[in-house]
Length: 175
Image 1 (spheres, one colour):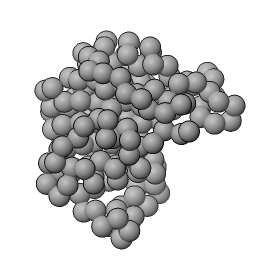
Image 2 (image 1 turned 45 degrees about the horizontal axis):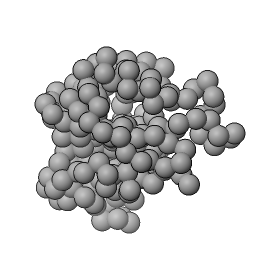
Image 3 (image 1 turned 180 degrees about the vertical axis):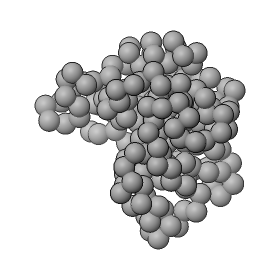
Image 4 (image 1 turned 45 degrees about the vertical axis):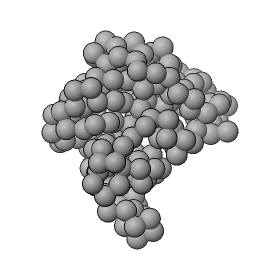
């Protein structure tokens, strides 16, 4: 079974009023799940480089799901400051199925850390392997150990692991 954003968000433990950035939001499944949990007093920033996806997310949030707590941000995650979010402003960052696509993973990790509040958390989910046409090509897989090493190198520590589905791994990091 594929990774279930709703179950992963529930394991993450967001709270009412949280401010959350969803890096590489894609179709917005994590952003929608987070927005429902954090309520009207919180905010989800859906961040992606693909403008067409962001437009669809905004439309679906308002017209279909009636969620007014999602903002879209067009940004390149591989540049520190690229999200234009304030330093130390987010309670949580979600990074799901994104790092395997990035060339400059160090800068993306720096941007995660930059916007997180002290003691803020990261939900990191990615493909555990290549599954013959499903998920990334073998040379693009970003392994669980690579994720742990990169985030630790940038001062984020492992809080705990989550069950993220048969083809994925999940790690919660803390600033």
